[in-house]
Length: 317
Image (cartoon, rainbow, N blue to C red; front, side, top):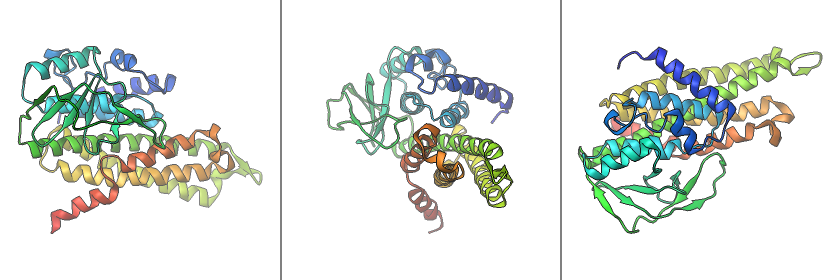
């Protein structure tokens, strides 16, 4: 993969600035920022970028605990359409997504919790035969994480058309699952780094017994443990993103390692951040509960840590 470090740094900076001003980023803002069409081919009005660029945005959204439709209506939707054979329907959907004319969601199993399906103009239902296009309306599902919108759809609802995959259906479906899991791992990495930064900033100024609590050995060790976990997560996530972007043979294993470790670590890091903030960490005003709830949901979305570890174990049987 080419070295786009400078471009990614600029994209990360722009995304961070936007999300710092507005945590709840609406669909029109995503369109204006150009994020929706990142992976849409240029001939359909997109940027023709790769999953590597999408991953940068996912990480920044996680860092801000942003409430957006980016996961379901951009990452999953465009990824699913790009995996299909060219057709008038596919090309029209890509063009309309890039322009912002429609919003599309993707239903991978389970169908009771489809990301960003509420209010979507089309639902793409991934099956072992291809991707079915439905115009049904989804039913909202309340979840512990208020920054995400999950909804239920009816897989037996009227289907307008079923579009075939370019490659073997089983392989294509697994790639879509891997993309989704990698995107969530990026989100968890971003929120973990946000929690460490907030905690370090707090323990530097919080005084106890006449000194900053950050000078206490137990607090230092806790922050060091958080940093170590984040460093390991960064290595695993970078490897997973690179493998998905390059469609590498080892992508499945790389994604499972990143998803299982990073999402579990994010829950622990958010929990430690709440503890190290003391009594204020448990208040609604601190905002740490937002990250803890998001990390908890991320841990279960698109495969729990145990499910991904079981997948890795199959390689040695």
